[in-house]
Image (tube, rainbow, N blue to C red; front, side, top):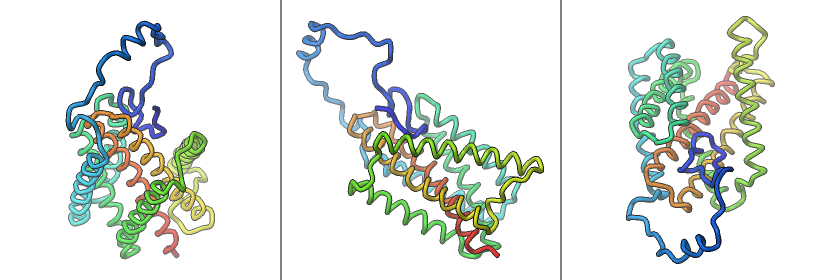
Length: 261
């Protein structure tokens, strides 16, 4: 089973399957394996939905705590930029680390909380109440996407995965190119100002982040069904946090555009 979310695709965990060089067992070997007693995993050794929920809730508590502290202390833009860079680095480390590290996952949530706290505070000075609106929008979107997934109305089919990954990759490339234009004096797009183009891009980004939750739900459900180790619940919670943080930021931008003059 291969994850569509790069955060959750680790060999031996959410990824898996035989490699290209794997040998085919003979008929006698297959019979011997069939005759072996069924292996029963020790209690608590496998990941469950409750494990993922508990770890995600813990990370959200850490994020909210550091976000509240950063907001209250009114930390400046330089610290926000630093937190963003550190958070990006931790995201890469956690994504590609073969053995998940709970302290690094918690550190990611803490640093991202500082970033979001400062960003929300800066925007709230221009748009009072925007942080609460973004939280409510993110929570409602999460609930709707979870309901759609559980009802079977939206499923992570192979075609759906390819489309989502293609659009996500294209969007990230666009952001990098646009950032380059803006950084070096080019004619980049101001994605935070009011306008038809920036509004359309923001709507697209919110939709993209929302439907990416479907991929997260799907791989977590399949991981539970496959009996992945309990420690992988940290990776699953981390993957959900990455998507939720992305969705919250896009919600902030959309609301700022709608309320801008």
